[in-house]
Image (cartoon, rainbow, N blue to C red; front, side):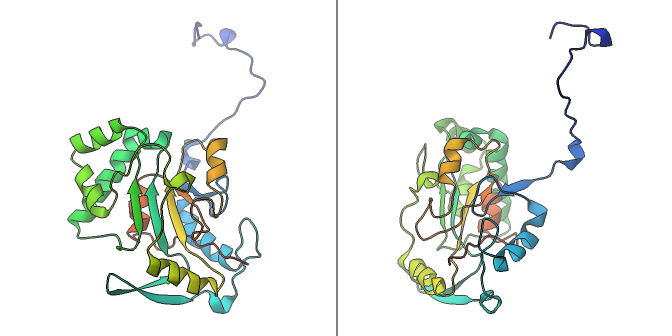
Length: 245
């Protein structure tokens, strides 16, 4: 630390020098079954399509080709909806160090603001929640004027600390559970969205495996905070599905 950086003779000798081309750094997410499986966001669609019919495993669901387009209709609040491979049923911005990061949390709030201004909304049967890392997050979201927009999309503050990430999402609507049960006959269940952690620690790896977050939701891909509203709005075409044997 205390050296002349212009004098190469004072440079320390490193056992290994690692170079990183910042141009190769791209937005990524994690999943669908294991948090250590990284996928560039730009490859989500192709990765989903290849996993859907691939052999059962960490990156395979082994869904028969004739069942890839399975669709199940259901009613929620007297309106008709459908569930299919890749449908979202839980979208949670959950508590961790990342939800104390102002840049990503304000990013989620600004995205919610734009969505509301454009007349977009989250389907009412999707279980949405926001559990920030601390009350300070709620304060700066309110002070910046974006908390109301998050709430209007359904991302209300449900508390502080571990929520959906440890299975505390609560029950899904009965009609959604019934639809999922019907689709299970076609060997599939539906997606759950979480935020991506900048650094995934071992404690989070325990929680982010399939079926750990909700017994009816078999996948747990991890996304950055501001991607959660995007996926819950279906602004990105392909989300995740996990298939049961």
